[in-house]
Amino acid sequence: MNVISLSDMTVFYGPVRGVSGVSLTVGEGEIVALIGAIGAGRSTVLKAISGLVKPREGELVFRGDDLRRIAPATRVRRGLVQVPEGRRIFPSLTVRENLELAGFGVGGGRAQRRERLQAVLERFPLLGDHLPRLAGMLSGGEQQVLAIARGMMAEPKLLMVDEPSLGLAPQMVESVYDLLVQIASEGTAVLLVEQNVTLAFEITNRAYVLQQGEVVLSGPSSELADDPRVVAAYLGRAAASPAAGS
Amino acid sequence: MARNRSALIALAALAAAAILPETGQGNYVMSIAVQIEILMCLVLGLNFVVGYAGMLDLGFAAFFAIGAYMTGLLSVDLHWPILATIPPAVGAALLGAVFVGLPTLRLRSDYLAVVTLGFGEIIQEVVTNLNQTGGPEGISGIPPLRIGGLVVTTNDGYYNVFLVLVLVFVAVSFRVRHSRLGRAWLAIREDEDTAQAMGIKVRRFKLYAYMAGSVFGSITGSLYGSAFIAIAPPSFGFNESLLVVMAVSIGGIGSIWGGLLGAGIVVAFPEVFRQFAQARLLVFGVVLVLIMVLRPQGVWPETGLGLDRAARVVAQFRGRRGEAVAARHRAAGVERTP
Image 1 (cartoon, helix red, strand yellow):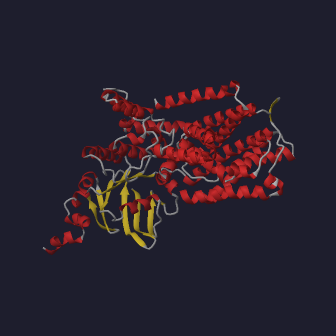
Image 2: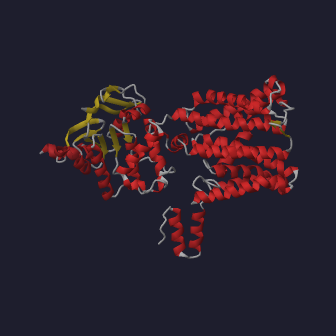
Image 3: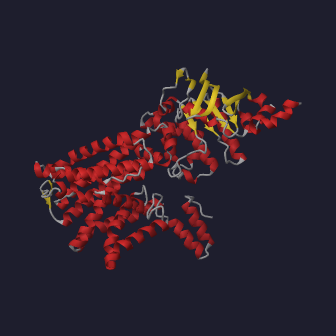
């Protein structure tokens, strides 16, 4: 079953077109990559799903419900959770406070919230040692783990992760990706937005390639990995022309 | 560790404050002390808004005024006891907070500051021009505070009353800071968009901050009226609002201890500088600028006094590498020393 499905979505920022005619689905337990160069519209798609921008056209269905008229906070409560680009943790709050904030909209009593925290700490043992520390004092990789853990606190059905590899050491990227694979294997749908194509293709089932606000390619990641058109989408049409010409 | 040290210093200051009336200070010192306490109470109120939720409020004196005038009117015209006037005063302030907050809290930073500035001015204009509030002359003959059989009439008495109020406000502030409410406010202050993405209803929580501030402000105003017997519009103008903002930022935005220290600095320094005669406000201004240049995060910021960092600098200066490293580790919260 599709956890989220976008069809023919168009978003405008004032007179400027952000994305147009984007269709995309992510199923339960699936990791899907959304890739593209800077400015291709990746973040716009995420914002539209989270409700931070209103699409002008198109449908947005989350687990069978039309999402278009649902407020962002309510979307979070229903399990539509975003791990923002640049991690965006709260640096002058402690790690524990960051985590506690995350389950904010989800509700439940004190005991339930504590249980949720325990469950997340079991999955991310690294954070357990750092609970009383200020989140700003963690290393970049630890902060990224915290950002994902914070996302998991909200018990997501769909976890959207925006460029988790940004500014991380390669080793750290791998362990962050392992986390995502593990999260997906437990049934959560994961939508991964990346610039780092090679890495993204390695862990995802399928991928969509955005170029200038439109989906130009989509399919199983293993097939796309060798497709020269992916490179073209990144480097512009000029790079594609030799291949097209030959 | 830094937190424990902060608490120790604060406790020592509290002990000193508690015995101050017993040390036989003159009326002058005691009245300055009462002024400091009143500003401390206001600072703790504004701290919810500016310190925790990160919204600039330039009209905080409005809530102070609402409290003082409600108490003045009810106690002088209707002969209510002072304590009984506090609930209606708080109620009126809450109404004011909601009235201003609902339409304006979608604004951010600068725009919000302008609106709150306007609100402060409006309240001052209203009490200046309304016959019922005594016009420019204000209200006089506000009766003393009675608690059970105890009637507070002396300066020392009000000093103790406000000391208790400061303590209660500090306790509430700490409690709230470490609650869900406090965490939500800090999240909004740090990153409004992410806070919203976490599922925090940003506008609602901003309104809560505004309301919490108005409660502290109006209670302080009520007792202020009783302590000073007479109240008049000039005490509730932009200057007063600015003084509170100044104390908060000099002390360290969001820091409870810092705010208290800031209140002390803002009230006491102009008095200390009396030896400079006419130049005293100039000297005061220069000192304020110096403080902000040397410690832009405030004298006593949220993250602690930074004594660990100071120790590190000193140790490095003396060339003791080992101690410098140890101090750095302590500052970073690492227990192990190399």
